[in-house]
Image (cartoon, rainbow, N blue to C red; front, top):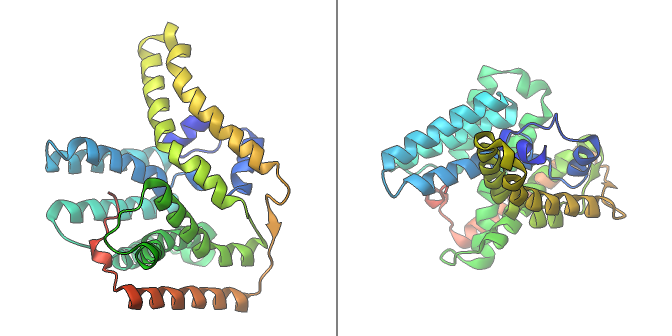
Length: 284
């Protein structure tokens, strides 16, 4: 069920206990239809086909985006993710650079125009864009400020920076609306996220081979089962620790002040580093 959730972005089949653990640990985004799942698919297809043909990589990646949206549906997070990934791929294909802020504003404007109710009553729409802003605006600034422009960070450091940035960008609103936060979200993401692409691949391959050779389904599913068992063990262990979820009640004024402080910190790091966002690639 968890492997299928990674592939399709559906939580309905998950056991209630596991679903609650995902929520407590701030890991819901790896299962719900979101930019993370879609980005993994796009990165994989681009890396696989780009060496043979740029057009082939672009076409297959676009087809994957359309197929993923058809399977998962047009939720606020999925709409934003598909729109941003599609525009980023198009810009890459024609050799143009796009500022992440332009993508953010354009995606927000288009989705709000198509579905005005997002603006007035959909918290997920706001959290989706805040998370996007954290990953694509705040994370590059943190990386440039602490590690420099030219140094390439490893995968774990990248996950750490992007996860922290997304948490910082969404924490004030989550605390204001729900009055709680997950202090174990960062270690949970660090222990689980690196294995999500592998789990998706093994689940897909195991499921496909099982359909072709049904008697060997158990054997084909063993690699995926091993990876997914580790992930569920981590979730079960961390969710059982004291303080997995803590209360944090803030007023609207404090929420606004927190975002003002984040904006000021971002502007300060940008002034000190001179980071060029147009050089960042959304879907590499």
